[in-house]
Image (cartoon, rainbow, N blue to C red; front, side, top):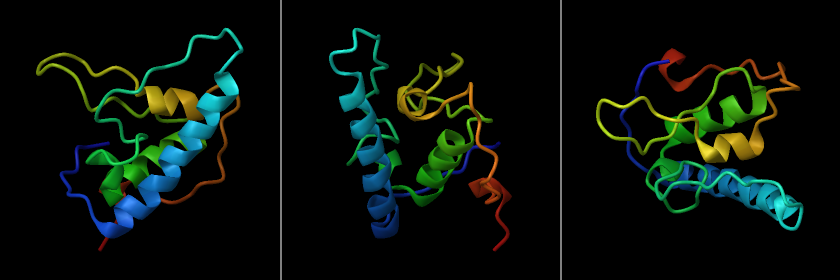
Length: 113
């Protein structure tokens, strides 16, 4: 998957709001379990009102990764030259032990206009 530069849009914010809501619901499930909870960064695509959370291609790709659990979604925040870590929002929603394969929609860089 290649990097796709994009800007927040109204549609991206609308879709991103639901992606963030799914993450918040999963966080509520973790409260009180004693399990370690992945902490989302300040620019997380899975956190409402961040720039990545409002960009259609980013939200599309983040949702696809989380739903299928095949391709890991990587964190936007990392030092130049360092390998990005796996996104904490992705870790909250994905279940790599039980991947789902019913999402045949493409990644944003695979779409044909």
